[in-house]
Amino acid sequence: MRRKTYLSRRNFLASSAATLAAPALAQETFDPDTTEVERDLSKVVRRNISSFRALDWQPYFASLKKGAILVDIDSRALHYWQADGQYHLYPSSVPLTEDLTRRGRTSVIRKVEGPSWAPTPAMKVRNPEWPDFVGPGPDNPLGTHALYLGWKYYRIHGTHDTRKIGRRSSNGCIGLYNEHIAQLFGMAKVGTQVLLI
Image (cartoon, rainbow, N blue to C red):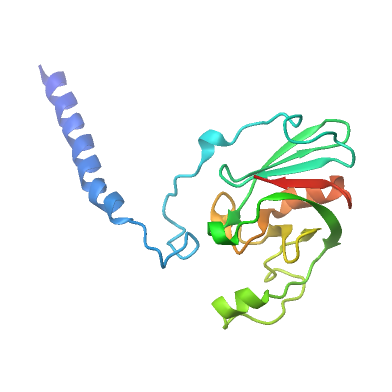
C-alpha cells in the first residue's frame, strides 16, 4: 500500500513540474523583430535533427569531378562528396531569413586560410555599428578558413561562435565549426561544384 502512495506522489510531482514549465515554453513566441541569434542562447533550442541524414550524390550532380558540396538549408547540413565518392556530413548555420538565402548552383572560386572580413554594403545598412574591417583572428566572423563561392559576398566559412551552428544565424553565408571547415578546406578544390537547396 505504501508503494502505491510513493508512486502516485512521484507522478504528482512530475506532472506538477511539467505544468509549471508549460507557461515558460508558451512564452517564447515568434517576434518578427527578433532573430535566433538575438534570443538567449543559453536556453534549450529544438533543432532540426530529424532531417539531418546522409544523402546520395547522384540525384544532384552529374559527376563528382573535383568533388561536390550540397547545402540543405532546411536541415542545416552540408554534404560533401570527394571525387572518389567518399562522403562527409557536417552540421551548419544557415541564413537568418529567406531573403538572405541564395539557392542554386555555383562553385568554389577561392580558398583562404585566415580570412579577413568586411561587411557587405547591405550589412552596413542593417548594422551601421559594425566595424568596416576585421582581420584574421578570434573576432573574425569567418573563423579560420573560408571557401569563396562564385556568388559575390557568399562563402562557406568557419565560426568562432559555435552557438550559431544548427541555427538560422548568418547574413547569407554557410557556417561550419572551425574544425569542420578545416577538414573541408583540405579536401575541396577551386572548381568544386556547390549546390544550395
